[in-house]
Image 1 (cartoon, rainbow, N blue to C red):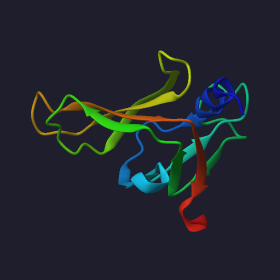
Image 2 (image 1 turned 60 degrees about the vertical axis):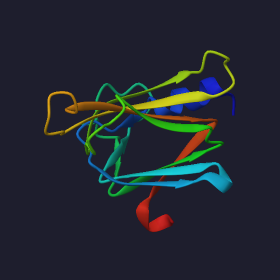
Image 3 (image 1 turned 135 degrees about the vertical axis):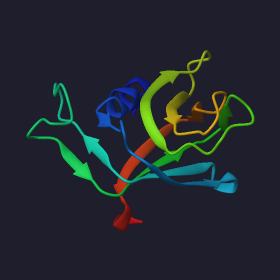
Length: 131
């Protein structure tokens, strides 16, 4: 699948207000899993997560493949758990995707909002029981 198709698929996920339960990194396999308490798959053209055709996976795992890097900004972050925004963009070179998750819930002003960035070539969404 071309990278634009991966981005389009990612944009059909409703992750807002989901809680990050676990982040697993497997450097040898270039894989990373982001386990969340809920992910909603929106049908094409659906405006929001309340669409009658939306499908919720509880809990869900986003499984990233071809992972090149994982980072949090700002540096020295607090472990924030609530996803308040997400997006996927092509890297400057156009050969990978940067998946971005804005996380909130820190206890200090500087750590209240952080961004988790996962640069990878693709992802799959699975129900936790499928792993």
